[in-house]
Image (tube, rainbow, N blue to C red; front, top):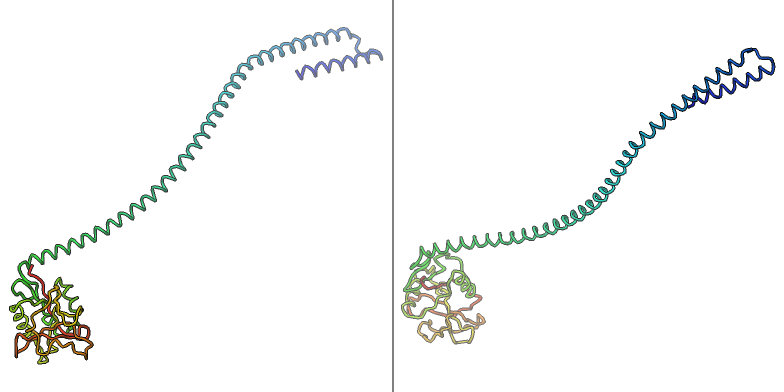
Length: 297
């Protein structure tokens, strides 16, 4: 189209120049032939222009459906992407909520695990303590089975009781009356209770074999007899009141004032009179040996 327009403009210019030459004396005597040629040329150009226009129209009409179809497809894809974009955003929000819930559950589960771990640790400590206790009980059972009907090592058997004389374990360790009784209790026994003549003779004879000197007062043994509740009323630790007076040494019990009271009984050996083998001593200030007694198992 642009070339055609150029040619038309050229023809117009040429004609204008021809008119000028004709007015002033044309150098072209055969101007009619020239005009005819230009007319033919214009006709050819017109036909060419019409043909080119028809061709462009056809090409345009042919390209319109293709463009419309492509545009429709693009629009459909765009709408699909928009719809999917909304779905993706919604799914993302749901995923965020699910993640937050999972994190919350994870935190709670972690706390529960820590609590369960603490409980398990407590159970484990209890189990260990029970195992230790079981082992100790089994050891004690074995020891008791081995000594069933017998006294423990270091104890002396007489009738149906076992006796422990602290002198046999240590000649130098001595205690006051309360500490001596505490030692007997720790051994599963208590201070001896002498409640018949045979037992009196047994205790006195055993003490005789353990004397370390002639000092009768320092070679005594604490027994489970005291008048701490009422002065002059002597009571055994099994709450039996002592009524027999012949076992006291002459002048005893005297509650000697120099000791701020003498309220606990001591057993000794006397070669003068084997029945008079007791005196009262100061419970706190008089460290000597002691005698424990427990029933035969």
